[in-house]
Amino acid sequence: MKRKLSIVIPILNEEKNISPLTKKIKKYLKSYDFEIIFVDDNSNDKSKKILKKLKKKYFYFKPILRSNEPDLSKSCFDGIKKSKYENILIMDGDLQHDPIFIPKMFDKYMKNNLDLVVGARKLYKPNNPGLSETRRFASLILIYFFSFLNIKTKDPMSGFFLFKKKIFTKNKKRYFGKGFKILADLIINSKPRLKTDDVYIDFKRRYQNKSKMNYKILII
View 1: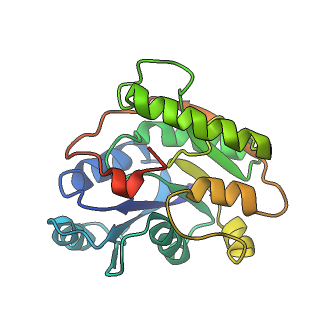
View 2 (view 1 turned 90 degrees about the vertical axis):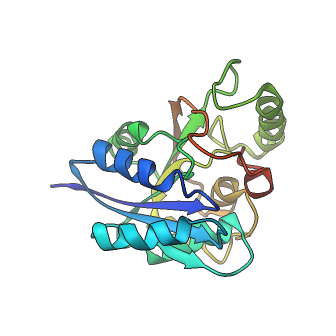
């Protein structure tokens, strides 16, 4: 029986990263039934054109083109609502989240009957290729404050995580639902408390383009 996975990828001006990321997902998920839902947050580059082209090429490619003001959480929620599988993976569209870690995250998720698995950055170690020291320390400060909420992950600000769709369906009225703190929103506001664990990942440098801090300011 194949493993089934809906991959939701919010993007803004990622024209150079869409095709390479799609190819990497296809490479590492050959044994899965999956769909890829890029949610374009009103890009002004060629992202929309590329998404429309790939939709014609791949049956599992199901982009959403938003025209509202960019908002990461709203983009993710739109993608989740459109998804057809029970298992949802959220990841960034700039290749800092390497698809090679998806099978390992899925294995832990299934083996331990978890509600949520976080692709956690190695924030307690220096020299992360995709993370400046300034951003690393900023993340650690935020994690310190979240520690008072008894959150069971080392990286509640990660943008790379896998969870059960029914958690979203059951709790969607509880979520803040806007801004950049989507993982923290899910963990803090879901009831009952989620059974959560981490898989440590290598956080990559951006493949193309510059980081858009106004869009990813708290996901880093």
